[in-house]
Length: 299
Image 1 (cartoon, rainbow, N blue to C red):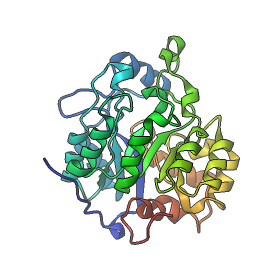
Image 2: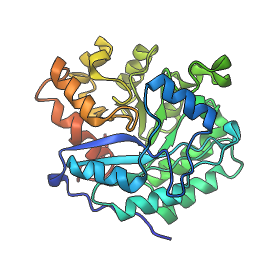
Image 3: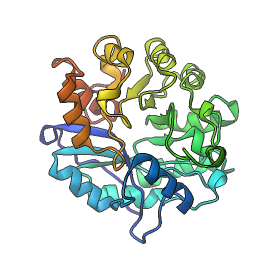
């Protein structure tokens, strides 16, 4: 088994995108079942074409960027076989000049803790991605604490989807998905219980942006990524905090392929979202520190 080891040269990259989805594997298997994929394409107004991992690597290499890549394992809720975490880690190892692999473990699996441990030890994943709404779990439930303990002990971050999601949007009953599971306030319990676990709250957390900012202000083991929304539509309070109070724990993320880094940066520049002195941290240096690519430890 190929184990990932980073070969990213921070001086050679201009940004680190911490939120990039791998939606299809080398055999054409998709990360979402057909009904969800079709509904998501309508919601996000995409053509449904998704690049494989090596194509994603080339895309980011051309832009002098590094990217955190992952899938979402929601087997117990969706009944759909996820993409292989080990394959994603191996693909990132092939492209370790630009890619950083995160694993994804369905908390509903009875062997979730063992899977997480193996992904760290055998595959070398550098973090974990969770989507409480799609995976149908309450992240504050103590039943999941053993899983967080493994991640904390490994010294890698956990990235949680927060806020509204386009997955299931427009389907009958939203396909049964519950938005409230992605309220960032549920992560306050996790951050309090596991103070050494670095937690990334993904996306502007609409409609709970104030909750996310409250957690990030109070718990300094929490971070915010800015993926999934064009900066033109960021809530004003998020921009204000990103430029001041939590500027050292805000991360650039696109949500590729649904939102491209090209569009994100173009829109951020057009509206002057971030202060010039803050932007380098958001685009690269904060993520480098969090992911252990820079000598300074996460704080």
